[in-house]
Length: 318
Image (tube, rainbow, N blue to C red):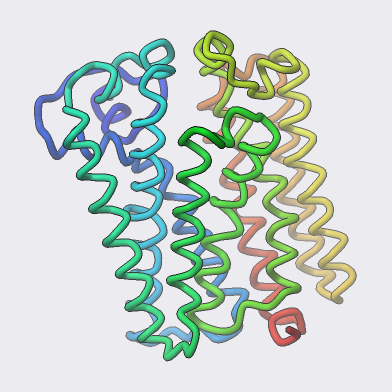
């Protein structure tokens, strides 16, 4: 089980492998691909233009491949490259700080994933017959955001608020935009909506900072647990997740999607319950249990919201 956790890129894992491909997969952290691929599904649902036919199914799959394994894999690999000193404190078993993979191989993987991801994005633009390569620009912008999140001198992750919001937007807004642009039109209204929704993603990102508090403090990274302490940071995390989902409830009511608003409220309630049981009790000890129990309700809420948006006028107003 520990080897599986390590292969998926989960924190707290241990174990060793000499397989170069297993090491490459560890760097890409497959567990992080799930929200990206789900975001594409939500964007496709919000577009109002997705249909259950072969070419649409294949295009959606390729878009999920681009967002998850390729560009999220790029993001995780470049983050590990620039975080090797922190990981030597927090997660010394990771491929780079353990010395299991040479830095030259890591750089090769970064460029291979980035170039392939951008190429796939452009191919999807051709399939969708875009006059402006929207998906390519989204992929390029997201990749640049990933770079400045991890790399100096900007290194957005040094700032707990800015870095976590960049992470939240990358996991919610960007794949949503990709899915919506692929099958319909990306409007200013839905772009703004998803950027607001990404504030809930900021709260989720904070959960990942608790186990890194020792290394972050040692190297001067101002994560929210470092800034506010574990108890206050857990309250901020829960508050951001709940508050901005409730903001989506208000939006759904405003656009006349009352049934979806009720469903979203019903999906928020168990999240609050699991926050009380796990997150607010001990976010370091119970972070995996909390995310495993609460996150399915959050992502289902995203789908409910996207389907409601797809049936509203928001996808047709520029």
